[in-house]
Image (cartoon, rainbow, N blue to C red; front, side):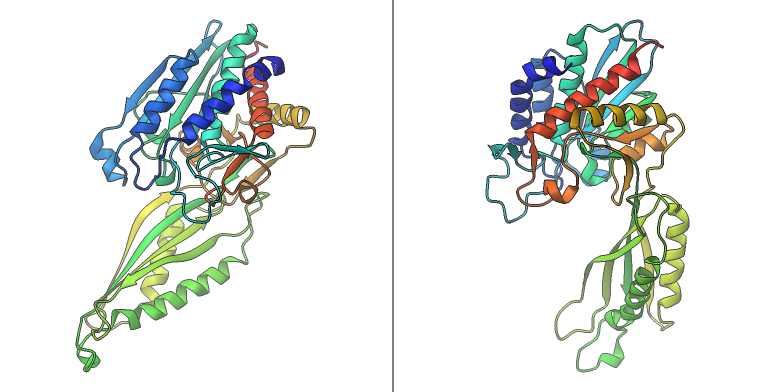
Length: 405
């Protein structure tokens, strides 16, 4: 397998560079162009590509402009073996400031490719495609199906990507591997609740503030209660390695009319990270109760809590063990270091497979941490050695899972 991957590696690098050079920022979420480019590149490598455009109203409902999901399917042998989905996303966060190279230049230097999405997760478009290509070229007697699920809405929650593919019945995999990094097998991750709190009062002239209802003043005890909750959460630690404690952040506050006007409306948006032991609906109910208890009982004051998004944590499902064991064995052999199962304190598209009852792990191209890759930061990059290693690990793992007992 290694010799096949080595021989095609220049093509794999060119494939990844071509993807990085197509902007696919989300927001704004106009991702049809990157899907078209990815499909063209895959077809040039000999794959048959299914293009599945998501209806525009549903895309807009999820805060995006355009999404076309891609599926590549290859059946080995009789096709009676497992169906294994490999999922990576091609939408990226906007580049932001601080880059020393063109974020869409796909610059190669110091043994790495630099650019937005190079690590998260256009690299795994390349990892998965060229692993599958190597497996086909090997001619090994395998049985089952490998599907590439290339989606474009992870930064918006994955609802018009993996969730849509599953809900529409376009795929029914038995196992799933989702984009990740090379030196860990992610078997669990946090969930998240995004909530908006609106505090409504009554505007008044600043010369007579007593004639109004100051929304900002009455938002203060709510904020105090939220920050007290943040500190209380630090006392709870997940039993899952790599997860840590639940987190709460008030990330955005807006409101007011003018300097000389009593503010009549304050809006706060918060991010509550859920550990695998927590249930999202229960956490949401407790937060709403906390806000309502903290809000002053003042005539003319209204407080509303509105859910923006709720993503349940990824939890390891029965049936994942053979996949985990194979990746662990193959990664250690290829990288020369132990590669262990762990959790991570973020959330990903992988949860949609898990929510559908599909055993799911995260593994792909990248270093030991998000920080090391500068993922979602300036000068994001992926090392060429990690890209090649991950491609080999995925190919060997697919071989293990598709080999007849």
